[in-house]
Image (tube, rainbow, N blue to C red; front, side, top):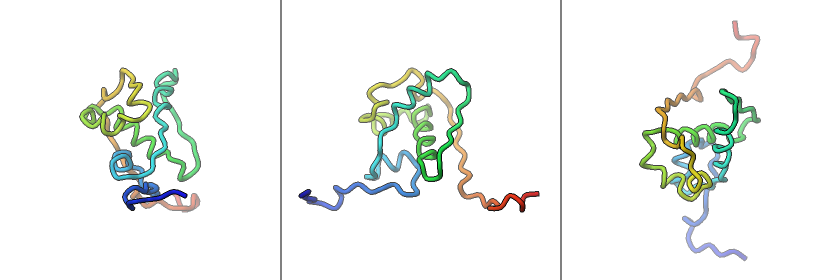
Length: 117
């Protein structure tokens, strides 16, 4: 049987939290999917479309990409990515772009299409 000496040893689930930095620094459980960054860079298409069901990690992955490519996040790279796949296998494009982030999650939109005119 597993013994837990301290409640702080238990990783929390990041339910509703799509902010990569907070997931990595605030004791949340994180499944490393950073190997896909390398694959995305090898993809010849200029644009990517991420189609997945709701609550499937799209926003968290986009936040991960933002921290990986943002030149302003270069000082945090080791803390955020050091023990992940991409931290051990960084690409030449790491922290090399000016990234702008937009959050539309707080926008109130109609739930029915017939109400859009």
